[in-house]
Image 1 (tube, rainbow, N blue to C red):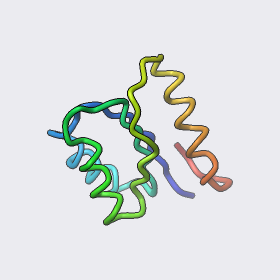
Image 2 (cartoon, rainbow, N blue to C red):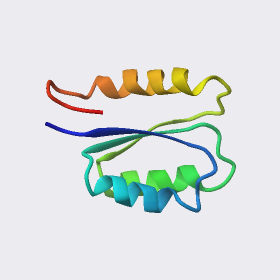
Image 3 (cartoon, rainbow, N blue to C red):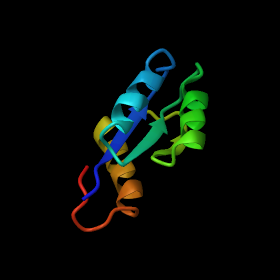
Image 4 (cartoon, helix red, strand yellow):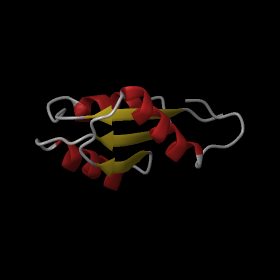
Length: 88
């Protein structure tokens, strides 16, 4: 069994490294979607992804739709990597 996380972010440069470090301690994969950061959030995510294959940057794109639709899209993207018995 593997554990997967969905992490939508925007302008989280001050905390995203700490968040990713904490999530990597117990999860197998972290799928990150940046909803339009104007700080260095996306670059930090990409740095983590270069060092740890468990961090999977999905996309950086300004989006202005509901959080539930965003999470649904992220789940669909991540679901393609899951095996039977895995958890979100």
